[in-house]
Image 1 (spheres, helix red, strand yellow):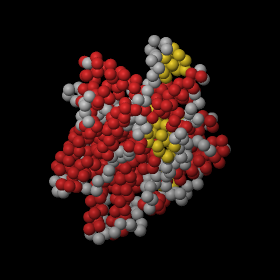
Image 2 (cartoon, protein in one colour):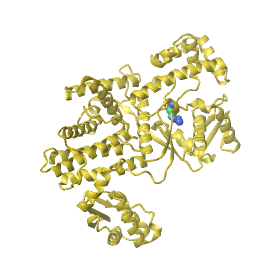
Image 3 (cartoon, helix red, strand yellow):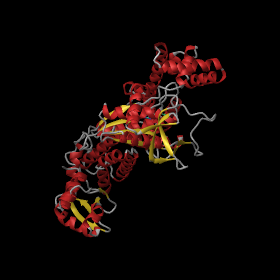
Image 4 (cartoon, protein in one colour):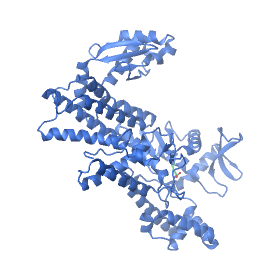
Length: 576
Ligand code: ARG
């Protein structure tokens, strides 16, 4: 083992066991980067209560037990109870050469492999995707890539809204020639939806036909189902086109919409009623749980079956959760859905737990805040409508194209167009991923497309700049692969320590389901690289050995940046 973090972790663990006994072998060594040394372990603070000793004493006893002569130049203890490690240069250089040869850039596979079902994106059929769909799609995709890279099984589920009463009027409008399937797939879906709505409100005959359509749809009338299929298929083509443009992993085969669970809803209701978890209240079948009370102190019902006998959103989610555990074998189920649905999910999870459907699996609501405009209001168009996602993506690409043209007028047009897509989409994704997901954030074109600061373009540009250094080296006939990588200058050391930290960042992002942890890391890495590049000449280094060593550091930084951006779902352009 040569990666410093796992090595220090197991050394600390061994010392703890030797000094305090086997019962503490599971305590987290809590090794991380330190301001005072290279790394520190906070383990003593965690042990203090159980060991009934002051943390500083514990830290001293652990430090005395550590056998790290080969690895550390110094191990010290500081208040309130940190153990600090300063690595030997020789060790760092050896560890670094192992990192350079590692395709995974030091990121180990998870020890315990889970099966993650990730519910994300989930737009509604016959509606245009809008800004509100960005966050779920982007966050879900980053989590799905990161967890997959860590070696977990990932099953994506696009829980599209493809069922419910609006389909009555939508089908009637389709029959009336309101639009063709192609127009629905690639034309203005909002117009189609609005036209159906307007007819429904203005025309009692149309409204009545729509209501009968809903009944026919629910009864499985073949002709009605065929129209419904047309609508759903057209929407799915449109979703796929958007996902392609965004470069997210979701494919048509990941769609398992609300309608998929229709046959299970009756069973779910019957099971909950028989076990006494749900009861009929005012004609509706409801679950009341003591922990869910409204402001008035009254219990809030989770409605499984409505008064009219129909099933809604909650019943579908209960059936979906049961299916995900039972049929898909999920051990973790993630719902990447906005914060306002917090109570809905809490109630669905609690009900499923009570019903015994979870079988040890852990469902989690991966909640996120809203996208706001400059006045901290919901981000909308000037006329107050929700901003269409397709148009927004196009605008991002167009703006990125302008920004790249200004920065690098030399770049051939065909390549600039390709890079503009990567930078424009990347800017939108990064702006979304880089702030803590539960918080709201302000949508700001100028900031997200800036080449300065914690932005997508800054990181992608850092990557492209390193590629250009490596290209120059190659053009002068210098081959990559220094026999020895030297960690001599402080800026080199700082960069190398940062390179080792991709593993911790990916683990932290996965553990808390927080993609921003990876963003913060990549920004830090790019900054350390800039500092290194300013302090340490590469192509004009003092000796060939030094030059080759520094080129290897450039190359590793490039690989780590590209890998990290990839985990976020972003491209790493070679020129821009
Ligand atoms: N289509 C829903 C909406 O627009 C989101 C679905 C989220 N997933 C779920 N299993 N409920 O609000």
